[in-house]
Length: 328
Image 1 (tube, one colour):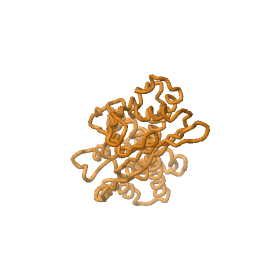
Image 2: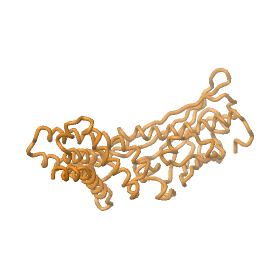
Image 3: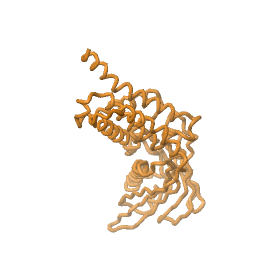
Image 4: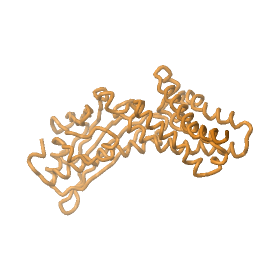
């Protein structure tokens, strides 16, 4: 009998926490309860994996719970299973999962550590404590949603040094000819499945000009020039239209121009350097509207910097080669 019980316990410590996670994802993903439950909140992103970790260790033997490596890493097994299953079901996109996975793993390990403390102390109310931990997301989320999400604005700054004339550089700043897949070096955004830049067109050079930055997968940035100094600087406001992007292309939680992540303004500035070099600065300001901007801003900054560095390296290559076909 002990052997049979031990064999039953192994799948239980994975399946039950997994089912708990799926049930929570289903509830938090319902549009009808969006006002009190949202997957884009700390209640889901931290407390749900915390509960998964606690359940995993609660269902484990005391001998295993006593092992530090076990209580840290065993909760990762149902987390990874949850990760794969929600991807297969289409509940989450690859980009969104990759960003939240570190938070999920840390939270699951912390949940396992807390549950192990109760188990190893021989607490008689261990089941009650773990049940309360599992219910925490449902209790805390309504309170979290009452706290209005305060939009935060952030800056992504990149630059590149170019050995070319300011005429060649500026021509490629204002109008970027078609970028082939081979010229695209944005490995990070490509890995996340974000649209890659295709081209940018400016109707004229001056304040009030309209610049259209076209990305693949249907993403278009409509840019209006607000300040312009020829071959020195160009500032513009940005409007991304996410509704032109097919719903199957990008995860709604990370789509640029969506309700959580939006790009506001941008600027190019050209600075003369020594020995025929110019430094091209590229700034962008973006907005995040979540209850965990402190974490989301790291990822958003990396995404924006990768996009900007990708465009800057294309401009440098074209300006330095100065081939006629590189401009529009």
